[in-house]
Amino acid sequence: MIKLSHTFFALALVTAALFLGCKKEDNNPNGCGTANYNYTLEIQAEAQAFSDAAAAYAQDQSTANCLAYQSAAQAYLDAAADLDNCVPSAQRPSYLQAIADAQVELDALSC
Image (cartoon, rainbow, N blue to C red; front, side, top):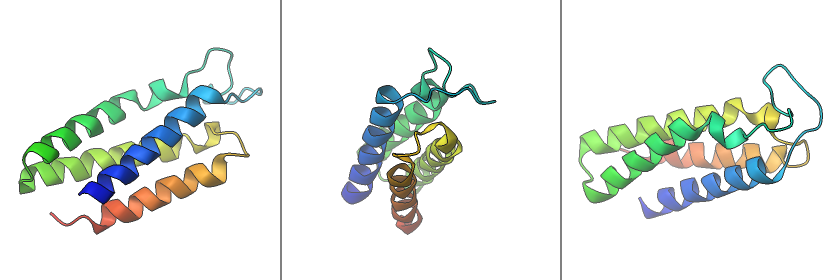
């Protein structure tokens, strides 16, 4: 649980750093690159649900909380992966690797 939490925390930090610190200059159909586009708003709901599920699971490691944690984590990873086209090209490989590493950790979690 601790290693998994650290992995997701690291992914959240990488995601926030990339989304807050980098902008694409060209417009695309998803709005990535428009002047005031805030990438973090795209996954805010998933991040909050994941955070809430992680807190609940940390307090009570029941099967129900574990399953809720897995579901919320998967939704967060899916949402983050959907935004890969918004990540600047130079950071895309490390961004995708962080998602892949977190997915491996999540897949290893047994409820």
